[in-house]
Image (cartoon, rainbow, N blue to C red):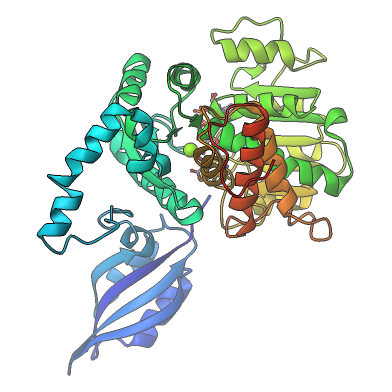
Length: 469
Ligand SMILES: NC(=O)c1ccc[n+]([C@@H]2O[C@H](COP(=O)([O-])OP(=O)(O)OC[C@H]3O[C@@H](n4cnc5c(N)ncnc54)[C@H](O)[C@@H]3O)[C@@H](O)[C@H]2O)c1
Ligand SMILES: O=C(O)C[C@H](O)C(=O)O
Ligand SMILES: [Mg+2]
């Protein structure tokens, strides 16, 4: 599936041979939509122009080939807004006060800083008031399951982690640090995260492939006293549940009586199944490459064993096609393009389809639309974006503010309810089951719900001043 972008093409046009009109018609015939033209130099024989063009497919090189082959046209440079936005990275560290003179220097640095260090050495709890710990999250990956791109390694994972850090800051004012680890070894990842954890108020694990992600999160949660949250598992599950709660209201069905098919039983899929069960679902079919998980099969990992024992109540065998017969809900967290129109046609009336694989959903929205009553994807360029960005900023804001030791099931269920509740009853419809990430209520509602659940479940170590019992 294509990803639209904006290209800026710098061209030299030799006036005696070609005109701008020739360029414009060539671009139009290749599917480019001109949005701006800047004259960089207007010489007697040659003009240099920057042409900003919207293209539907960022991977399409045809436009440049066509222009390069035109007589009188020389392509000088091609840039793409997406790449320009990444030049030099997307985040930086900024001091909170300037160091203007010696006095400032001796306050924030030596010798003044030494007294502050000693205060923390005597009472480590002071790290929360005297360092950035109370507002920091480490975004940790090993680059093994980056979006749906797979194992692309720690360096290539960095743009996603920087993006997560931007979102943490903009949406929840949390200072997040991307940490891309050059190891896939479970024990080594656990040891590294433990060793760096003292400076952080929370750990957001990101894009670590399953099944290692389960052990890594379980051990770190048990061994650290700050929240450890694997975003692809729980952030995704919380937002999927939020979307499902509202979608079910639109189609007037109950979670307990729905047949729900979850495809891609990795990090996201396992957690989605577990959270849906906790929210009252009784009829879930978990499908991975080998087919529908079932009691009869033997599985190497504990999560699949548990799911096989707690899903597939009818003991169905087969794969996606068999699972989808008469299903009310499809939730895909697998890979792009695995679903076709006949799959959707085999579902029950008033079906709900969440094709959440990134960047390419399980089915193109244009194809799916006529065959799905409610349709959602993980992407920002279609309605109903079901993406974990609706969860992780608010859930960490809440957990940090009440200094929760962990993010437990009750906090996740509360976060899902909070996200769902941002869409008001009179606004809710097929095209609007989930709030936009730019809806300012989301982070605050999630924060409040998470803090309340943390207090009730006694994992909060502090009651923020704005929270009343
Ligand atoms: N929208 C969101 O918020 C969101 C959040 C997390 C993950 N995702 C997307 O979900 C996908 C999975 O992410 P993950 O972190 O769980 O990765 P993962 O590697 O842990 O799990 C992916 C699972 O999907 C299975 N799978 C892949 N292709 C399949 C197919 N054709 N049929 C059946 N199963 C198949 C794999 O075997 C694996 O078990 C990715 O595309 C990711 O971008 C979306
Ligand atoms: O990064 C995203 O857009 C969502 C999710 O974390 C993913 O891995 O796809
Ligand atoms: Mg992710």
